[in-house]
Length: 122
Length: 122
DNA sequence: CGTCGTTATGCATATCGGTACATATCGAAA
DNA sequence: TTTCGATATGTACCGATATGCATAACGACG
Image (cartoon, rainbow over all chains, first blue to last red):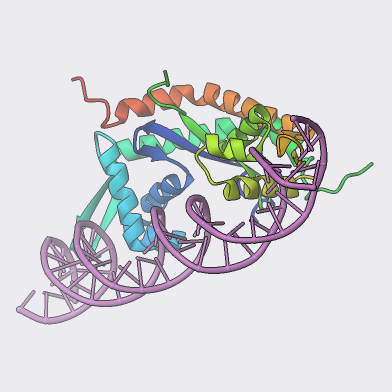
């Protein structure tokens, strides 16, 4: 089952002008690694292939080495996989997410208590 | 002068379904605190008064107590100010930003080195 | 008691991110 | 050599989000 609040914090990192990575691109990279295809990753995430492909292009353009290598043709029609750089970037992002969630959990709890979602108990 | 990369990380926190706070609302709260007016804060941030007001409404609705109190009329025409809750929320968010920036600085530096922005030096 | 700048709110419009669709290309396997 | 599914890319359209503008109410002060 999913937790009540899926993600407490959304982290978006600006690495350079126009080069950003957030939950969307990270999840896409992960989906590509797991499915071995850009289109399957896009379907899984409920986004159009157009957009998935464009995100991959943006990522590949943003880094010195491509994060995703795609191939056309073949019995499976083609496919895609993460490069070493791709795995490195994805893992670094996940690590940032974990660290962030850890250090801000206190403030999150404090602020959630002020939310109108949670009735006052005085 | 501004730093080369204005903000390394954008942090958006989900406190409850529909209740979120990120850089935009935090900056808006800060601008309201400093200018004493929703419209002046909106102008400073380059957004329409309409939107600034709606963001304030969203914030006030999301918490048990309002974060911003506004008044109409008077010699100045009216104005707005943060409540104690407003200051608490803003300060908690800033603290989360600081902590986050601290713990992810290592990964940021690693990833920036992979950016096509920075030429390879082999 | 009229002036002034702000809050508050509705509505029409513009902008932009994303989708939908259409087409071309590729290459291993049957 | 035909088939198949995926990559690659262009174009038209849609919908959400934000702006622009218009209007009303407000109230201390001169």
